[in-house]
Length: 519
Image (cartoon, rainbow, N blue to C red; front, top):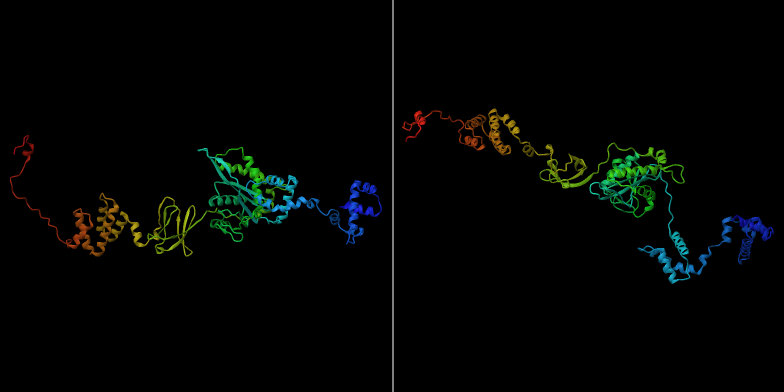
């Protein structure tokens, strides 16, 4: 462009074509062509343009005067092509339709049309004209962590069965330094997703201000451009680590272009380098991935005088939030009704957990983790249990009413202690009762009956009734009740022995010594 100005100045000075050609290093034909264009510009009707006006223009403006546009857009073929551009764009979205196929159809209907290269060139120009501008985002250090899963799985072989197990590939990166983390997990389920995210934060040694996941189900319940519904478990995770969640907009991959680019790079730096290796468990696979990711972070970046790890350690690591002391445990939530036995039933574990009996029939909120079970009512914690998956009852005695507590506490020793408090005689009688060859549970009601009789009867009378029962070796609630009801406790037993009547049926020593019986 600067040479055009020189050419105009030399022509104004009266230099000839050969002289201008030699001085500017141009061919004579090029000089002639520019001089012809100059005459046309100065000779256009309706304009008062002079050589001085041209020289006063900036170089790009002068260039636009001498090169007004691409001649190909003035070609009659372009008008026909332009009319079909929208059709070509729609057809390219259909399955199996390629540019080569469209070009073949185009040439069949228009034999004198563009060649394949020109056809593609004009399609590209049309796409560029339709495209929207993109913005360069500024990422403060330590602010965001982009999270995504790769579209392709990564595999290992089951050692026992030989089955190929496909794993999901979790990828995260800090956008300021482009520092990456990746690992294989069994699935994209919430438990595996949060496990991978926790491992990522532990690897980074801190917590960023924002987590930016894709709109996968493990992170977002309902995708929305403006107010996505965050998964409850991910919210609990963010609260535990003192960070916030800001999902990327649905169907907007440019929001997380850096992590998308990381996935593409890791296809070649992890997938491709492990393609000829075999792994027989998930741990071995992740160890190999860890080595490749470290090499990736330590590789010098193009157009940068540093690697990702150097940038991360220098600018981001110290700005990350502090990790909590305890690792996050996935929390599950449920709304349950307290049954009449003052327990709530967790169907997942087939387990009953006790709740204070005053809450029978009421709704309680349940929060449980892998190891603990919490019950809340009206915002107050009312019960805590160690979680059990064996199926059965987990009961705290204080949660039971007095009747139920008595029922649970029953045992031979329990009844002996109650009898001791009444009297020594009753204690001996109850002790002898449990020495019978009977199952203790069968005797608990007998003990309850005896204690009830002791409360209703005169202590001395009741003790005498027990002594009579012990003398006759009868251990029964009914026997003592009959003695009390019939007022037999104070009757004196007849101890006189009546003589046998005289008779001849008496056998002596000689009878048993005889060898042959004689009748």
